[in-house]
Image (cartoon, rainbow, N blue to C red):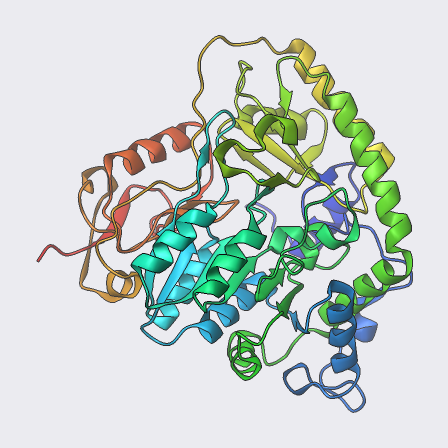
Amino acid sequence: MEQQKWLDEALYEYGRKDYYPFHMPGHKREFCPGTLKNPYLVDITEIDGFDNLHHAEGILLEAQQRAASLYGARETWYLVNGSTSGILAAVSACTSRGGEILMARNCHKAVYHAAYLRGLTTHYLFPEAEKSVGLNGGISPEAVREMLERYPGTEAVLITSPTYDGVVSDVKRIAKIAHAFHVPLIVDEAHGAHFPFSEYFPESALACGADVVIHSLHKTLPSLTQTALLHRNSERVSEEKLRRFLGIYQSSSPSYLFMAGMDACVRLIREKGKELFAGYTERLKTCRGRLAALKNLHLVSKDDILGRGLVYDLDESKILISTADAEIDGAKLHEILLERYHLQMEMAASQYVIALTGVMDTEDGFDRLEQALLDIDRETERTEAVKDGICTYIVGEVCKSIAEAVEGDQEEINLSDSEGRISSEYAYLYPPGIPFLVPGERISKDVLRQICIWKEQGMDIQGLNDYTLKKIHVLKDV
């Protein structure tokens, strides 16, 4: 009988090995000085003197005010249920039940869940495809204008910027257009919590005029997994509604470990941020400079893609290595980096991998990544085959609302026989968790073909109830 493996023991065993984390969380498994050395000592509940997150009047109110001051927001709330809870609260606060939302089709699944919970009609903004690498590009400001003219009942606009891959849209222009139609702009900037702290990175959505911005502290800053911030930046969004929905979507027993970790992260950036980010960006620039010498693999940079696929800016903290011209694909490169060099990447796509870097990454970590990629590059042949990168969403025909499809009369059929049927389920690659099939959409030949391709490449497809990917729930034909 196979011996059981306890999670805590497995984690500590892994932590003692030499695997280097080019993935979130941004603390990179290092202690922030002087914080949380013994978590059990400070894991408390709402006892006297330590306030209540859902009715903050003392120490937690002051902590959130410090975060708002750091980011330049009117008001900031701690999120202990990750950016997901912030997205759910923001969408709910900005829309009425059964209302309409204009959203980017490459949004995280949490946005679709919010639309389902509020019974919203969804109108989609389709990002341009950056085909040379296979990225989701940016959102067109003019498309936002056209859609708001076409759907005057729209109550909010929501975009993801930066994307999982670091692609930034022209948030400033999009905000001005949304405001001209008296509609608030919500920006899922979960991957951009570091933007305000160095001019090397794109401008933050808060500085660009977005009304609500969500940041995942844990993705790129030294904070614990599941910690995030929700910022209110204008009077276009009701403070009372945000508070109400945060009370619904967040745990009634918020972790003081998480909240202490967020406050410690804010303190670290306030007191040492200038010095830390100066050192980090120099290490990052040096690494990117050396990786520019890759011949068969390729380091994606701003020079490659700005202006293409409506890419307004690119977050170069993400080291994105393309395999478009190499004989190997992204999954194989990911495997070699992990098994041979003990470098754990953030994700692998069809023809690229992403190394997520942050302020806590060391010079030794960057050196290991550089050497590994240069070694692999030397032993990898160039390919003459033309690879067309596939983005993580596929344009589909919307036939029903998400709520109608999820709650309608369903049947389970073979996935292979589902072309033309209306899906009652999601399907997405994880990471990044962007659905390429949404409940209410007609299942196309393109979707089925892409599932087969990704399965062959060993990509992690999630969302369907059937983990074997043989069955799917669809609406019964009427």
